[in-house]
Length: 184
Image 1: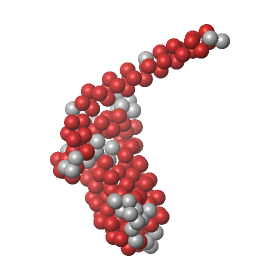
Image 2: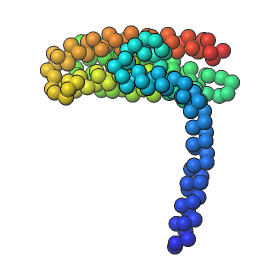
Image 3: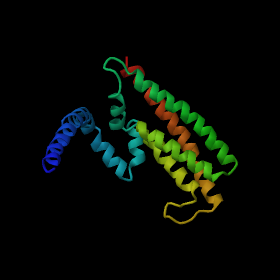
Image 4: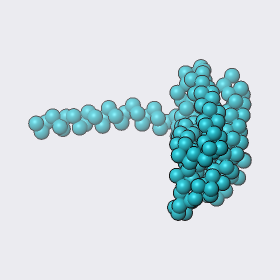
């Protein structure tokens, strides 16, 4: 019995360590190293909006990971993924608008969470951040953790919905231009 656990323990780490870290760490580390200092310092600082205006509306580390899913000679997979996101985002924005009109905070929180998660998967961080706030305010929770009234929550969400629409348009424009320029 003692030999079986010993034999299986070395086999599992060797098998897990060899293929996964080499493939994942090597491609993502060099591209990640260049944009990270700017992205990390800006994302964690109060200058987040300045970085958003100066750089791409997409976290390049995450976008590069998506690009790694493509075939070597084509970006068809990632381009379709991006296209599907924007189609889904437009539908979700309509649902958010309808929920706002009917003052449905539950739907606003739910759809805010959905759009937050899907935008995060592509690195569209401005949308992710704003939708996280929509989710929070839809649950009637203020930034300091105190309770919000329905009217106060809706007022905060109104401004965020306008921002999300602008940020989605900016991300779509940037990604469309990237594919036209770099995917050819």
